[in-house]
Image (cartoon, rainbow, N blue to C red):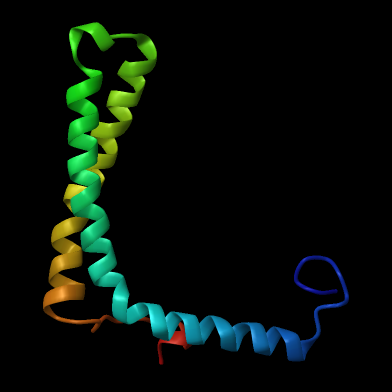
Length: 104
């Protein structure tokens, strides 16, 4: 049986798929840190604007309280990830320990 329950997935196509994934991994790894930092900065700004707008007195409703909580959670996640991305991906490059076969 193949990976998704069909017999059409052969070993050769599985190896080709794995090779394509490795090529994408190697290509994207060089950009990931910069993309992550940009997404975090834009996300922090956008979530801050979202919180400011949704907490105005005229915008108070149960749904907007939920959306504000989501924006706070998302913003805090990005604030927590930003120093990590800056330190390990941008300042020191892509030197990280990885036990996966793709990393070697």
